[in-house]
Length: 435
Ligand code: UDX
Image (cartoon, rainbow, N blue to C red):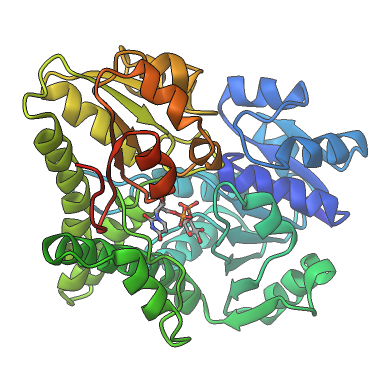
């Protein structure tokens, strides 16, 4: 099948490479010249485990190519995926201009009937707008599908090659038939395939992300109560998680959620519910608790250091989660800003994200080597749970810091390792040790 993928960011590029791996002829389209240049040279423009190998394979087989020309990508295509960004506006609503432009571009450049698959996360009822664009802009038959993506950064290739579910929303039986053919290689087995109406698909994506964020915020609220009472939030989460009705995933307390999806999707979901006449106040509380998780960590550092001014703080991890170089809405960078505002000297260290962090926060000091970053530090804060930070030599670190103090914003470290090395240890929602 001939497939166009519009927007080759984290979702679009992985989708394009996966469909090419399934044997389809795929063209990736993006308006960013630097991104297309990098891809045409055969390189992934961001870090995602397994992506470079997958690109090597599908570029080598000729199943995937890239262009900036919409006409070239869309001409003769059986279907076109829209995978463009939907950033938050100041009022919380998603800015859908890129989706609108992509839809108009498909309508303008279609050379025959085509199925448009809307993958960008959009508010429910966006399909109605797209239908009306298509009806006015072309005489070709454009069938619309909403197929939200559930892949997680850091595990995107694996999630895409072996999805646990595929969600296809459409009111058109022929569009459903094309989607089944497109995804034939992964159907059966453990993958659940949902065929629903278009509005259900649109709403399900916001519902999933909001519920996951709700679980994280529940854990972060529990952490506050655990800290006040001397209980251990990790054990509470383990006990809760052993009930299969609750499940253990996404109950990890810490600095809160970040990334390109949760913060903007929560805002957008709340806004669209409000527009439809329902005040989804629960989502406001989820967002408030998330901000509170970061504030609580700032307070913990202030309490530990007494006077924060000119004290050196090493942040271990700058990406919004491990396994990615993505720093969008990263809690680590929000913490860096808060500590800088308080007058601290902040140094960041991330295995992948240093370069993107400095682009996002110009002037931020970064180091490749955590031991170098720890020289003279008054406090080390674990911001992202990269596994390599758990394996640091804490005895060596103790020898080079000014104050042996670790704040664990992700409950990553083994308390025994750090306490035996002589550090005071302040985890999140768990009793501190060696104060
Ligand atoms: C999310 C959804 O998981 C994915 O299905 C959707 O397609 C896109 O949005 P992603 O943004 O890649 O994926 O990251 P995710 O793994 O969900 O983590 C989001 C944030 O929550 C991270 O900052 C992470 O550190 C934080 N988190 C996650 C917690 O604080 N605690 C947890 O228990 C889990």
